[in-house]
Image (tube, rainbow, N blue to C red; front, side, top):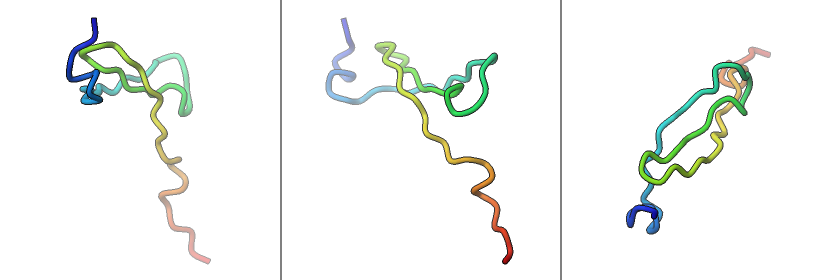
Length: 53
């Protein structure tokens, strides 16, 4: 049975990384209460740099 807080949308997300995979599909969040998983959309590292031009 799901936790009452999770039924209300108040999940407790924990960040996980799959060691054998690379890229954005390797990172995901799992709720520590009910076990629901959701993908994480992290910005690409190369977009954080400012390219002079």
